[in-house]
Every structure is written in structure tokens, then in C-alpha cells.
Length: 145
Length: 145
Length: 84
Length: 84
Image (cartoon, rainbow over all chains, first blue to last red; front, side, top):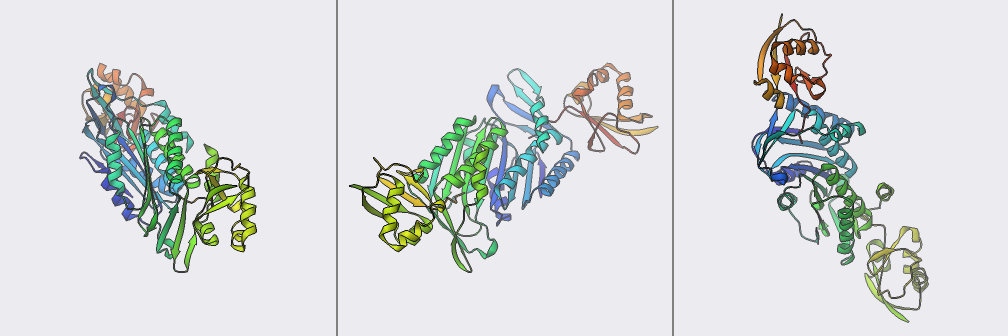
């Protein structure tokens, strides 16, 4: 399990290759990559987090995924600080002998990460800055697990 | 939409970065990567396909995914020929404004690709070669869509 | 009399011994074509012994054994697919 | 009297105007601590006006406003999370 919370950019492609190589023999690798959208005139995204709690929360979520699905490994990288449109915010990767496990575990990680890891996004646009509002659908997504 | 059926190896990480860059502003990118497992003493995997029909079938499946989910793009790369354990067999990538669409479309592509695209795998191991048997669960997976 | 390209893949190809051949037939359905092929030689009879283990495509589109052959140029027989 | 580190994030931090402070309190629950803070100044009252819009963590674990403060060293208040 590999959990990283960092300000610096990372190379999602290199991480995928590294992750897949490290866990070879696993058959199925799924990644999710969150990218700053550029719609609505967004010029930057600021991500605040709660140092200490963030890592603990992500580790807890990843432990839960490892306990529920037969995984060969899990990776979570999440950035904080100021990001430009097109930049990768975060990445989740899972690997498993079977594709359904890899898919479900990645979706589980994303659903919990959205609502249970202490990150807050702030969008900077032509009309100033505003905090991204949590969606009810994100909280609702947790009920399926 | 980008469909490739090829004998040569490809760099999944480079493909992810390329795909994500081309479709920036989309927010969510999901990839599935199928890798030759090395368990059971497998020494090589041979993949046969039906040239012409393969491309048409993949394109049909990708069209279907694009019609059903709000996608910014879809990528399917599938190799044929002889592969070694640890090598990437195939890759699917989807991008969408919302993560659920990207995840569902990627799973849909995988489920259909498994049972409706004319590829056949043959495993070469210590006791000779044998054709991989289709699993009932793969056919059953289609019923959820 | 129609001329069809008939293709075989995976273990069907191995059992029949060739990847493709041209077949002259008056069969009007896939099933009738299969019967003609089975009558030819043991290797065909063996390959087509259990149709539930086989899939068929006409002109590169999946279909079933009841499908008509009118206008069809290419028929392919193969086991269930195992890509991904 | 207990000494607590109290942390604020996102718009809660902005509304209160500081990211963290040390608070001396005799409150035994998070809710009681919130009442003490609200009584201090308008900016606290404004930040804590609608608790349903807030989340709380004690010692870096999510909890609810009824949670006891005994043994707790750090309390954090913030809006619903929006990572990913």
C-alpha cells in the first residue's frame, strides 16, 4: 500500500507503469485520475488539507479496501496547494487477479476519499474564488458499500 | 475514440498521459490495464484474433459506450501475438466530467470486450499449451448493462 | 451455388487443420453449412460436434446458427471469445 | 480546565480568521465547546451558525458534535470534504 499526500506534481503515467510492474502477475490494474477541469473559466484550483489526518484517513480507507477485496496492492496520491487546469489532482490505482475486484476497490477508494479524506477545494475563476460544495450524491455514494 | 489492435508492445503510462492531456477539462479518467499473469508456471501467452472483425467489434462496443455515457473520449488498445508474463495485453481508458460515468463506461467496455471481441488466448506452460476457457461469469457480466 | 470464405479460429482452426478455405455450397443457413462440412471428414465432424461450444460470425458480425446465408461472403467459426 | 488545540479549515478558517488556536475550556463535549466559542465573538457565532454544514474531528478522527472531549488534545472544525 502506497499513500502519498504532496504539493508537487507527479507523473500519472510513470506511476501507472511503476505500480503495474511492482505487482506483476496480478492480471488487472485499474486507475482513476482526477484532473482540474478548465470549464467555467476556472483559472486555478486551490486544495487545502489537514496534515496528519489526511494521511491517516487515506490509510484507513485503503486498509478497508484491502480487507474487502482480494487486492495485490493499492496506490493513492493526492496533491494539495495551487493547481492549474489540466493538472492531475490525484490518482488511485488498484490491482487484483480479477477485474471486478480491481474496479470495485478503485470505486470504493474514490467514494470514500471524496467524502472522508480531509481535503477542501477552492476554485479561482473570473468572478473570484469560491469553495467547492460537497454534493449530496457523493455522500449517497457511500451507502452502496 | 481511439481503437488500436496491434502486435507490438505499448507503453500504458505514456498512453494514459497522452489520453489525459488530449481530453483535459474532463475531470475523471479511468484506465483498465490487463497484464499477463505469471502464476501456474505460465511462460507465455498467445493471442489470436480475427483481423477486420476485431476492429469493427471494438469500435461497435466503444460507440455503444459513447452513446450510453457522457464521455469525453475512449481508448482501446489490444495486442495479439506472443506475450511474456508481466507484459501488458490491453488497455481501456475513458474520460468524463463525472467519475461514475468514467468508471461505468470502462467496466462496460471491459465486459463487452471480454465476450464480444474476437480474441482467443492460449497459455503456454510447463505442461504444454491450452486455450483459455471462457468463463460463465464473463457472459453473465453482460446482463447488468 | 454460392462461394463462401469460411474461417476457423483458435481450437476450431487447430482441429480442422486450416485457418480458412473457400467453400461452394447451396446451404441457405449457417446450420445447413455446418451439416455439409460435418459430412465431409472426421476432423470437421469433431470440430462441430458440440455447437453450444461454438460461436459464428457472418461477414464479421456475430450471429447464430439459424442465420441465413443469402448475400453472405464470409463465415467464421470459433470458440467463445477470451479477450481482455 | 483543559487546554485544546482547535483547528479550522476552508471557509470555517476564513470566517474565524485564524487556522488554529489554543483554547482553555471546561466543556466536556464538542457541542459544549462550540457553545463557548459562539459566545466569544460574532465571527465564531457566524462560523458555527449552522452545524449541519460542519464536520468535526477529534484527534484527527471524524466524529460528531455529541462526542466527549475527555482525553482529547486536538479538535478540528471544517465543511464537508471535497477531495478527489
